[in-house]
Length: 343
Image 1 (cartoon, rainbow, N blue to C red):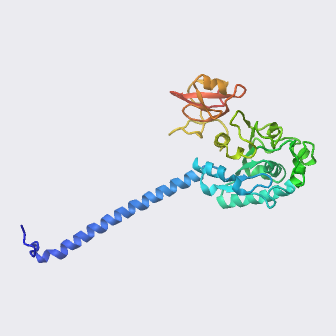
Image 2: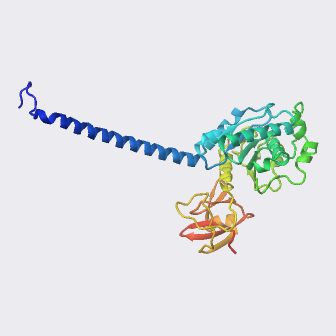
């Protein structure tokens, strides 16, 4: 054992060289670690940015007398399901949708332009509730919104008036308190879905809604989906915008109608997702033409919250219904893609 006051024996002339070598090695290690951290951070930021840009920005708008905070549950739901926080906006007009809805639509146009400038997106999704469903449609129809809105989601909207109309001390309520109001006659004339199919339309209504009444007033002729919530757990007019089933249906609809395919579909590679791009050359594989419900029954698709999703690619066929048909092509074992070129 070495005495306590004894130092290890190193030749004095070698100590500076050893210190230099140790310092150089430590420095090199630190540089390597720093480079790795920077690289990983850059990759993570890049991936986050790419993911964040996947969805069009969503502007969520409450109904008459509502505040933007009423839409916070919807915002949180979208964010927890992959939407970037910096692309989610809650907003209402200067009167909380109690003024002339044409004026509210003008203010909405200003908000849409601000969001497009802030995010760099060319189009936005409008998720509207009650009275704001009308202001949004007015904006799309009359104020140039058809070129700036990719999707319109209308929750519990008095699209054809309401019998629960004791609120007519507000100008907006006078406009939707009757199906024959001048405002609604003009808004619903020609087409109830202005800008369609460039703008995709979804309405969501509930059998337990006694405010937008009767509940079918919320439907729009020509909409891509008029979604009905029924049964014992159906939400009310005031809970529909935070109902889990309604929100899941909205998310599925948004994803299904993002970047709609144009031209002939082309084969895809990589991990299949619900937004898998269809092929551009003529693909191989057997074609199946059936109702969406038929695809589910025959094992080519599966149900998710009332929607039929193709097995493998998870592409959204639309409502799981006997009355909606889709053409699928099988491109692999239990892997199907939507292919409108199928005979």
